[in-house]
Amino acid sequence: TQLLEQSPQFLSIQEGENLTVYCNSSSVFSSLQWYRQEPGEGPVLLVTVVTGGEVKKLKRLTFQFGDARKDSSLHITAAQPGDTGLYLCAGVDGSSNTGKLIFGQGTTLQVKP
Amino acid sequence: EAQVTQNPRYLITVTGKKLTVTCSQNMNHEYMSWYRQDPGLGLRQIYYSMNVEVTDKGDVPEGYKVSRKEKRNFPLILESPSPNQTSLYFCASSSVPGIGYTFGSGTRLTVV
Image (tube, rainbow over all chains, first blue to last red; front, side, top):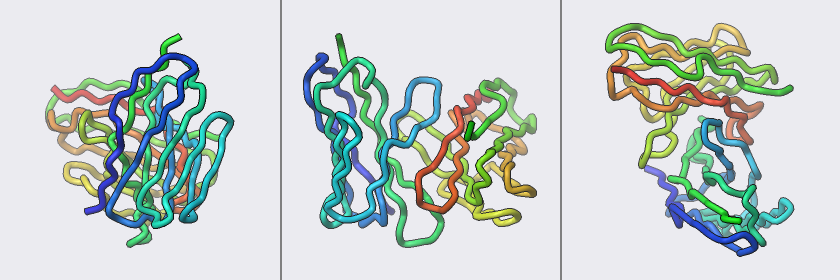
């Protein structure tokens, strides 16, 4: 069974601080996606990384896919209160063609002004 | 606006009373899927559909049925709901399996 372990589970920081969220697995994924979910809403896709070692930037957010395609990280620079939310990593099960997403447990981020 | 629409958003029902949660997408996506989200367990796939009339089980299909008679619609059917199906349900779609998904806003179901 493929699992994705996300850490930390909870993070409460002050506005302006930097943070990193990690997503780790012993399994290889064909791609990995990061989502952000706000209370009462569905997850919204932030980025998809496909190639081992790939780095993508989305304004103050930097996403990295591990060389072996087993892990990923999300780094936020100078966090703002608007970044508050639940961040989810999700790996695509590459062993089958089902398109199934394996989700991490999520990281709840609170950015205090 | 490209979107996945679920209805209802909230539903409280009694054990054993059949219900259907509807899902519709306007992006002409071939792939659609249902997930449930539970505290401590995260999001888990219930069923998925590669295309019209093509559906298959995900990780937690017990107690659920789906159908895909048209490309845009993918309803989730609970024939005899039980309290352990109390959860937050999400429908998602994508043009290609494994490529970025668009999720609906969710249906919070409570079975008493």
